[in-house]
Length: 201
Image (tube, rainbow, N blue to C red; front, side, top):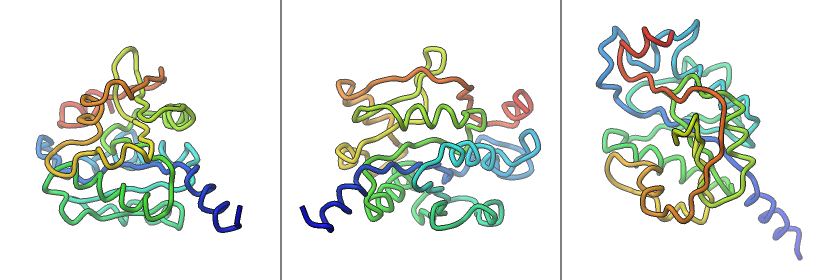
């Protein structure tokens, strides 16, 4: 086996984390975008991103769209923590997910673990548990509720939606035979409204 082949095989074994942060947050009626709203002393998105970053991924991609997160993440950005802009984010979650897939493919990762920037109470331990689990599609389960983070092996990337407001959930629905669940600690609540923020802050 050549050195080139060994390098390629090693790259395919790595896992990237992905935080999707591209949506408009239209249900949130606060004074700012929901991802920038204060949550227990830091922005909602920063809480979620810090948890993902704490899981120790080879690389972590944050995919932005409606709101610029570059200032918020200035102290984190590096070759390992990358901010990706999905120019067609308004076409739905599928487009932000495809932006992450394109980067993970270019970087040679064998799988990605996807979470959402509006889920600030999903801890690093949940991200790590999903990343460490084998399977083509691995979903976190919080007290019986299946929610992100979700691990997607490279083999299923071509089956992910490319249009519309669909993410991994559509693939999970279509291919239940490929899905396994892992019990995780934490709280998978989404901060969608000002009431959510008030309730959980």
